[in-house]
Length: 177
Length: 240
Image 1 (cartoon, each protein chain N blue to C red):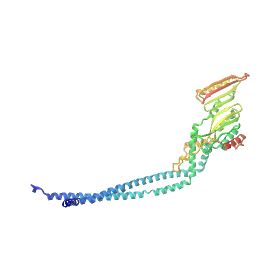
Image 2 (image 1 turned 30 degrees about the horizontal axis):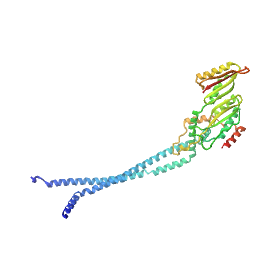
Image 3 (image 1 turned 45 degrees about the vertical axis):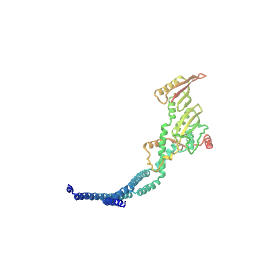
Image 4 (image 1 turned 180 degrees about the vertical axis):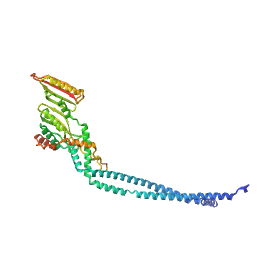
């Protein structure tokens, strides 16, 4: 029975397989060494190519040219800064002069203004007239402004008196802005 | 015993001889792997770092070139004129001399007389508060009625340095006006030579034109400094 077993042949096959494995292993070893070498050299070359010193030199050149315009640059910075801030101020700036101008335009010429107080919240107008008609016109004009929501939001008749010698009517009006 | 050791050695030698051919390439592969992790990967990161550095440098250089082009094309005279207008509109310090000039000239133009007035300037080096728009406040007595005060207020409102009329109190012969003059110290913390310089926007140009339409103290004739102003200047000096 044992004569059926061909030991020699089996040994050859095993030996061939082993040689093949060794060959592959050798190839892999050499290949890996070569690959590592190639990658390393390639990266080294790329690092040399991408050397930042030339970019730095170029930047220094530009910086040197810009330094000649340094005053202009700071002037422009200040200008833009002022524009930004003036824009902000113009948005929040209360225009009492406009309020004053428009309210005064509504006061009839026959009324003599004896007091005019205006601040950010309210306006108080005091005046006197020989007749009631201009006073009525004033109240009417200011009432229209309240209805049209122009400048004033409300109108209060604080007082309407006949002065002591009876020669003129005195009026005081108060409005919220 | 000695025979047993010999047997073991023999078997070891046999195993070594049998696998000797695998050892050398395996060692080479291991060395390759070691080299890869030890040198190639750090080289890769160095490459990326260098590349990033170069890209950053190039980007900054491009930005600087843009700035250079922009600065080169600016007309210096126009810039000076715009700068002077805007720095007068909103002074970068507490320009009390300009304020006094403006108030006095406005009074002259309105044909009214000013009473004695004073104002507190405070520290000249820094803003007194952290307000977005700090102001110097004045209460100016005016020896005039409604017409004169109205005229004074209209002139002040259309004159730079920019100011705001806070309140007006008009009597028959004497009145008073409270005015806040704006100023704003320069904040250089945002200034960087490497930042992109923006040219003046169209909105900004419109604003400059708007400011140029305002009166300035120098656009009127230089006034005689009235007594009230002189005393005010003395008071300001004393407060400093």
